[in-house]
Image 1 (spheres, rainbow, N blue to C red):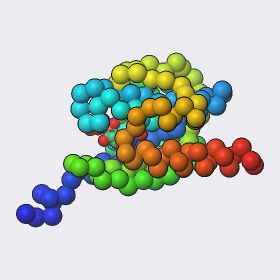
Image 2: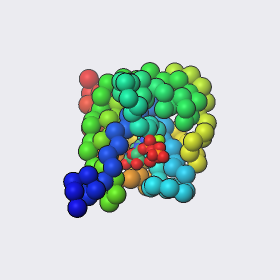
Image 3: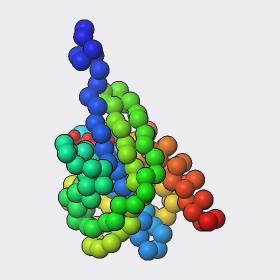
Image 4: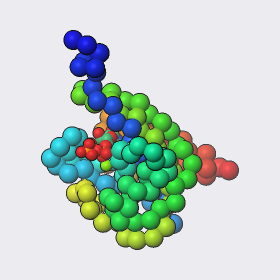
Length: 143
Ligand SMILES: Nc1nc2c([nH]c(=O)n2[C@H]2C[C@H](O)[C@@H](COP(=O)(O)OP(=O)(O)OP(=O)(O)O)O2)c(=O)[nH]1
Ligand SMILES: [Mg+2]
């Protein structure tokens, strides 16, 4: 078997942790069918050729949820290998600007507080995003 045939597909994904003025975070539930069906995630999607991560995140959030956001600083970059898929998740903190989130390409959307995230089931790679987010919030509350 050659290298190409044996390695899983690799997706590079722009991901947003979107906060509103009440300090809540936006999560969405993936559709029941398909890869990681029914799990919750932070909104985002595949980068297209020629676009920056910021452009990718703004576009995906508009397409998937119909809202406008302001993409802020990088939170973390995660490389994770699932059984049939390798993902690079480039996660940015973002601020909600306008619009009510609609479940256009997902099953459900919710605004939740940081301490509520543990009540939702996320893909494996998200453990690292959530702990980075908790550290980030702990630090930004101090300074
Ligand atoms: N958006 C997002 N994706 C995540 C998270 N955690 C995680 O493992 N992923 C994975 C799931 C998917 O395989 C991939 C996101 O890709 P995607 O939403 O553009 O694509 P998809 O697999 O839903 O479908 P497709 O466009 O390839 O048909 O990254 C997360 O928190 N947010
Ligand atoms: Mg997506």
